[in-house]
Image 1 (cartoon, rainbow, N blue to C red):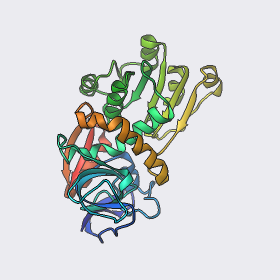
Image 2 (image 1 turned 90 degrees about the vertical axis):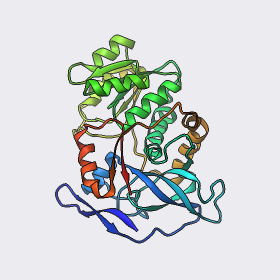
Image 3 (image 1 turned 120 degrees about the vertical axis):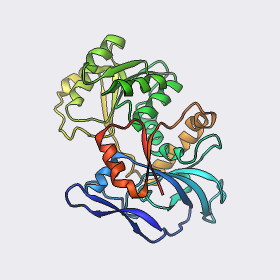
Image 4 (image 1 turned 45 degrees about the vertical axis):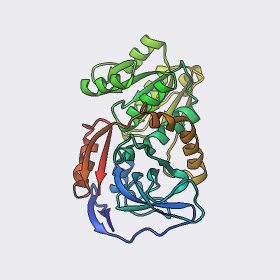
Length: 323
């Protein structure tokens, strides 16, 4: 089968389409004929050589796919050959076929484009596990989302609003902020021209939960923007900087900081996350209230250009790769 492999990790890394062996079937798994794979920042880090696949996963990138079930293990229930699904992976999604744990797969409703569904598993699992399971965002509380126009950001806005929270976002263009407003964001902050600390404190006195993809110098400012008993969830360090934090200011807010990743979690933890999503958030997908925001689609042969587009931060929502 064809897959997008990392042909070189020298410099910035190189992607190429190559022939690879089909993945072997395993107990508790389903085989999926891939309709689309979504691109994530973790894929870029893997291409650059700093974020390899966990042991037992394919060497090539890809953390989420959608497609058609073509085979099920004998011990799997709840899925049948021909089902439309999307799935969370530890790696290997940039390929024509994947074998995924059935516990990490979700049925795609007929109302949703099958390719578009590839944009859901990683984003919804990241937001749900951080904002709701760890930070325990409650109805009526306030959420500040950095990178509101990203795949994670557009998902966080929708989930928070559907859960009854208020949402502020930061983004770097009027176009991205306009989309955030369409998705329900209450406070729109252009980080190029405004201070998010001042805006959040002016609007609400502080944010109860902050979802941070920037890390680095944002950490001290995030603490300033916190409400009392606020929670900061750090899911990336796109700034590439170290954080300089005075613990006293965090203590004064009775604040908490969590740093998390999703990819390396053990299967039982990922299963618990997906079980909660299946019961609580997935009905919003089925009803059409929660939708993936798609920026663009690239063919497998255009994978390098797709990565470059992601790295430019010119995108809004998710970028898809189509076999």
